[in-house]
Length: 278
Image (cartoon, rainbow, N blue to C red; front, top):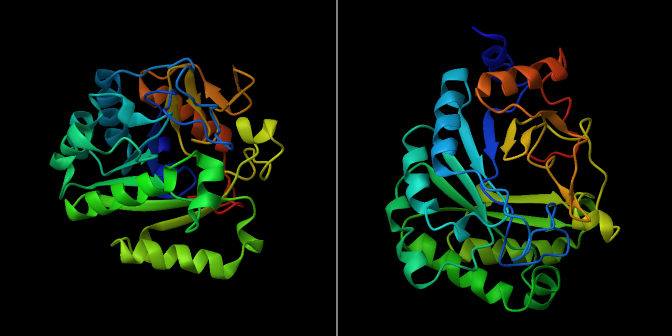
């Protein structure tokens, strides 16, 4: 077994390869890690590159793939790409779900029954509270999208991002849980996590600081290089953060994965996940 495969199998490196196909987004959330918005630099990874990296990931011992951004579904080729990736490894793709209407919703129908989950952001059961963070009308669009996806048999996860999950109002959070259960999303598919003080959240003095000691090492590939974590290739004041950059080399993937393993060293599994974000 190679050093990379061994580190993955032992849990010292996360089992999922993450990729950023783009950085631009149709929203401008107040705590966005990448300062995503409609007009930002796109930093694109093309579909051929993504498929090649995922094939390499499986050969190295990775057991899943994550797609994030930016809003991945601004890319017209994303649904077709996800179908292809699901033939290689199980997929989680992060989305704000506000684009899932009309032809874009129809384009997702081939995802039904495949090992694909769309992880959708919803931060409160109260529309006003949710929309303060994510933009006007976000709550209604997301709830409608979840219903349509579940009805079509497409896997859905829900991600709730809070300033301080430990002290958050328990009754308010339970109302959100009741909502997602009513929409057909079970508790096992609901992730609650803190705002990370990087990107736009750092500018707004929000969230908790997070570096290599707080984040699980999960190899993350962008157009700019390989990073420690999907929380690593963040942007502040328009500039890419490089404090969690592992290497600029992303091809072949074995080089980037090997570099991450060397940085991790002999740390025990879970040592780097103090914030519990998985």
